Amino acid sequence: MKTMTTREMQDLIIEEKKKRDICILAHAYQSHDIWEVADYIGDSYGLSKEAAKAPQKTILMCGVRFMAETCKILSPNKRVFLANPMAGCPMAMQMNREQALHLKKENPGLPLVAYINTTASLKTVCDVVVTSSSAVKIIQNMPEKEMLFVPDCNLGGWINEQVPDKKLHLIQGGCPTHMRMSANEVRIAKAQHPNALLLVHPECLKEVVDQADYVGSTTGIMKYAESSDAKEFIIGTESSIVEHLQFSCPEKRFYLLSKQCVCHNMKMTTLPDVLRAVEGKSPEEILLPDETIRDARKCIDRMIELGG
Ligand code: 13P
Ligand code: SF4
Image (cartoon, rainbow, N blue to C red; front, side, top):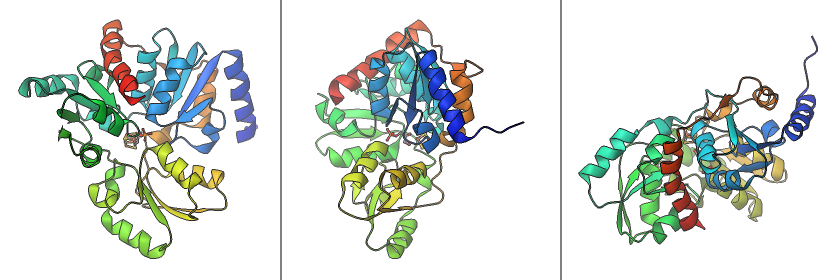
């Protein structure tokens, strides 16, 4: 049996997606071979906005489950598929709807702000959702001074520092991938690459974020590195971003802050998964109850309204 090359498989995917009117959305952490067949690549905020305006009738999400759920909530009349049904964000499982309701009951009067890395069901009881690239602006634009924030305490702590006149009460977890990077690894990387700038995601621990030259979303980090005059960068986010930057800026040097920074869920989706999905074989269609779509949509619409 002849094994298909990456190029042959990509050509087939492009042909099939056109034939079947499928829009492929890829999160920035997807591998480069998937990027090349995607209609849109972005961070969580960009993907949400794109999902709402894509003209195709079917959306294929190459990313993790909460991203596909967000697409379905924003485009309920479209068919939405997750390219690899095993791909989920562990942080999104750190708090459920019942725990969120309990939290609201214990803190009457405080709005509940959730990171987008949460389930559709939890979003039904939230007041607003934020992403790493939109959080600061949204919190600034909220009329309330104090809010509850779930589940990422590292992102929440960073937002608190960026918007000192507001107070987020932080509850629960964080990203197991980004939390693996340490101040000691920053010290070692800076000693090895003294001229490099450190660019990190706000899901990193404070001890890492405090030493960064730039803190931002996945695409924020990429744009910063692409437009910077600097020639060397230490990248403190998922390893795929180093690969993408090597393609977009071959004249610059990129070093991964830590070998630990691999999101196994984001890495789960492969090019053959994408081919199977566009051929209509075995990917999971995202189906949500109408009330979940209706109620979860309110806090996502509010994110887009306040985030601009
Ligand atoms: P971005 O919104 O920066 O793409 O982050 C998503 C994510 O899961 C980061 O770990
Ligand atoms: Fe979730 Fe972290 Fe992976 Fe992002 S990098 S999908 S937050 S586990």
